[in-house]
Length: 281
Image (tube, rainbow, N blue to C red; front, side):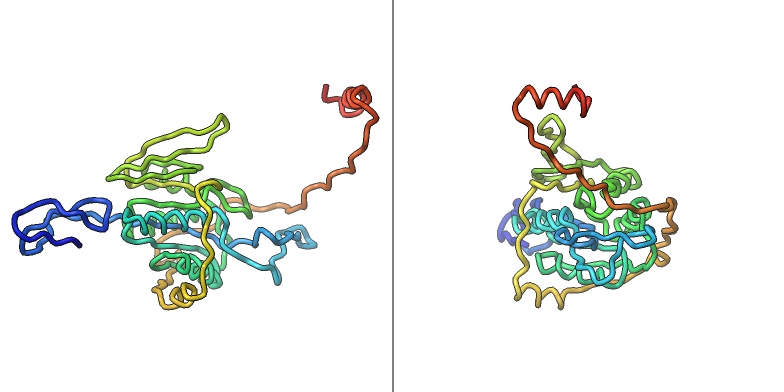
């Protein structure tokens, strides 16, 4: 907090807004920007996913798990906003099994201030996660929820949008650039036709796309510091949320293997095969 002796004047603080301070240091008005970042524990993107023999689900036995890459980008952006003096606190939240604590600790090693684990062993579908996040938002009162655009395990791309609907907040998805000034966020979005720039009022839900930033590596000193940062554990019942699945998975199958390619003698032969065999022209 800045301090201005003498007459009343506007003083720049570490937050995004100025605080009005009188000469004996009493704050008349101050606003803080808290960012909530949901993170998901998924199969590491370098791992080749295997399907169980009964085709009921993906085999997770002895598989390396890590933070969803898009969520890691969201954590990095939130930490950068804090380092830039825009945000005052970054809170990460994850829902799932007890081992999700590792994901939260990784986020705190990147720079988040504290974590919240919503522990449950049951299946969590996007709507259930959105309801859990709504309960956390009502408790934490963040001005920004910054999450990855989708998880690489189910590729649902639904949770952020559902949360915005439940909270009646504006949303800006697929962000490749985020600028926050005052109570407005200007977001550059990646769309099929190129880039689109939108402006939303805070509080809002923002989702991070791949080109928003390049996440930093968590250094060993920061990993050690993260172990001492506060991590709160709760559960869906304590939040008053029913997470019973609404959808039933009937079958999980690997994608079909691509057939081997062939060589053609010349362009005329290629056109002939596209017409007669592939029947695409």
